[in-house]
Length: 212
Image (cartoon, rainbow, N blue to C red; front, side, top):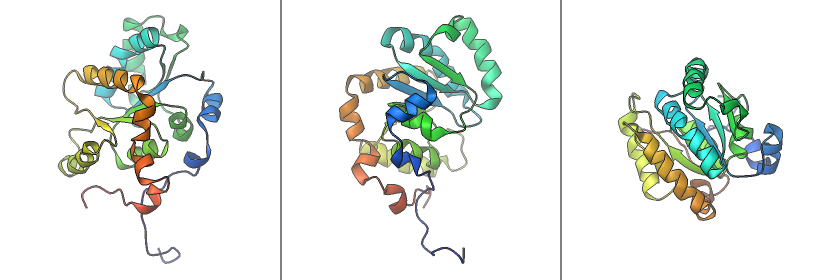
């Protein structure tokens, strides 16, 4: 660190989070210009989040015409596709669904979205909030520091910066209800998200390391 200033703050995120527009991101991904939901459990995936997505994909697409980007995680992709074919055999023909094991460029994915369902790791929080979208976080219940993390995640949720759903049984009902509420009042919710309350440069000002 001798070549760097001795004051280190925030999580390092790409500059494109500030410069890339939603229209540009959707064009890069070949998406239509309509409400878009991203569901992700990280590069390795999250079983409960994947199972929730499987329960909701068809209904969100057909009843709400919601565009959905679903990152399954590399190790879970084959299992998810096998289950999805049983639940929704024609999913590949559904132009609202984009299911992949992993996306190399999460900037484009998140900037193309209106809502994100994700684990609540510090980098995920930083990137989602920097994207100015509505966040629904599902904390990992068995993380080593979960007790400390939950304390701080709960504090920010109390102030309305994001929604929390705890990873118990049947979390698809909570995700469904929150997504419906968000879609009905998306403009108001996005104005209340973390990034819009603390400023666009929050990653340069706030040290988002839980447990401190």
